[in-house]
Image 1 (spheres, rainbow, N blue to C red):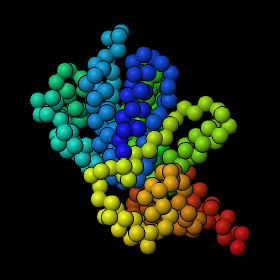
Image 2: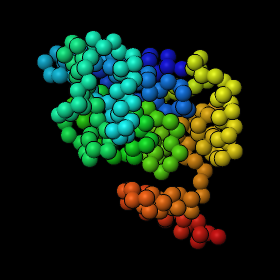
Image 3: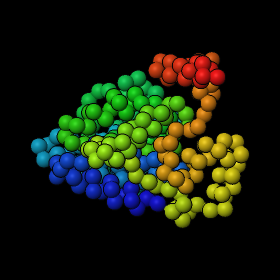
Image 4: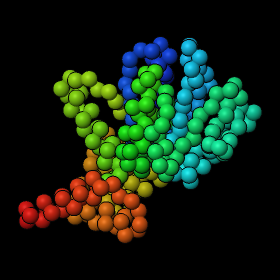
Length: 273
């Protein structure tokens, strides 16, 4: 399942080293258990090991971006699981950094830190669980790759909530451009669990069946039988508005655009009845 991802990443990495134009963002969006997160993590670390600095001596700047501190710890655990201990050191202060034995570093960021992706240049950023973050980390961060023709690598399960709506939007615009023969600055890559030999097919079928009982739309997005990684779930407008209100009652910050869009859709639906 990780073969197309690996081949495309290597191609993009080689183009970066040659300063050859290529896509600014690669989105790896597919169902669970396809190996997206681990594949992207190992490819990102491998790129940092292979390329220490630019020909002019400037450092090759790499970020790994997680949703929050807790999920960043999961990245730490995967690093400890797969890398030989003599290859690296994880440093917590003054910033969370993966220090590699050859002198290269990767900054491990989390989106719960305000403006985590707003400052500085970056050549490669791997954004894990992108649909859980909303659009701000991506919108702030990916323009910072352009100085040296870098790229953004985002991995995500299919969006099933308003927070991931920005991925739906990018996919739709990407498809429009493709159909019109226009330039597409982003690319979507599959990494489906059906090709993962370590996943039990019967267990997967059982999980998908139960999910379908709960929500057919979410099951369609989760099982990856179609390239739905970015098809908008078929929810009633009222359900979207209620979801936003619930987030507010829980004390969580909600983007104003999401609130206005959800309530506006609810009112428009009511007016048509």
